[in-house]
Length: 142
Length: 114
Image 1 (cartoon, rainbow over the protein chains, first blue to last red):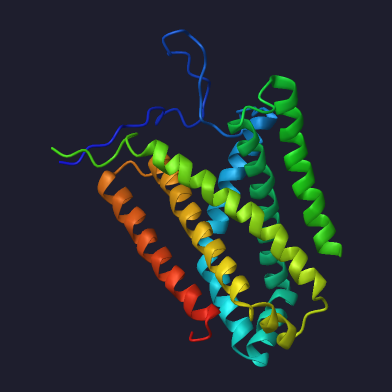
Image 2: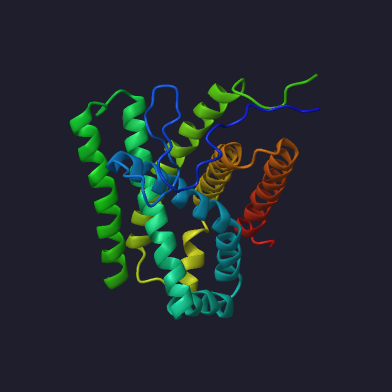
């Protein structure tokens, strides 16, 4: 048998808050009831954007191949990203890239010990989310 | 019994994740600037961007960093959400094969043989 460390917290998907933890604090995994601090939002969006980019990478390589292959292939890729579904996909990928990039720089800064106190950490978290959204908007209209 | 999961490989992967992030953080703005200088782009100009050997190499290293970064990142996600160890390892290795193929594919694209 192979073994792995087990994660906890696999029950309690909603309903009233459970209070049977050892210290009596409530815990639940109902996402509609969890109030995430801004740093938590940056973290989960970092994961979501990373997963999106990881899954899109082979598709992007395919588009890259087409775009370099021939003038027709280039026109095909440009045309796809100008279509409605293509534009929406590009919008999602541009946001994912920007958010992942900015939140990643924030992680690297914290690895170096910069901005780890509560106030700068919250400020940089707000800045990452806001700047990624603003730059995505700028890309969309530009 | 051999333990095939756990924290033993953590520091290695942590470091590679940072190193690949730095490679991408350097390449992306540099390439955006390089492409902006040559704008507006059509097919000929776009192809021309990848003519210099240094751009081919930098782009290949960027893609290698992105694929490695994606593989390590997916491992974190699989560890959190896929608790059946056999399935987790199968998915992890399947993405490893997929990304290894992608790296060879990227080289073929850049050197014009794909």
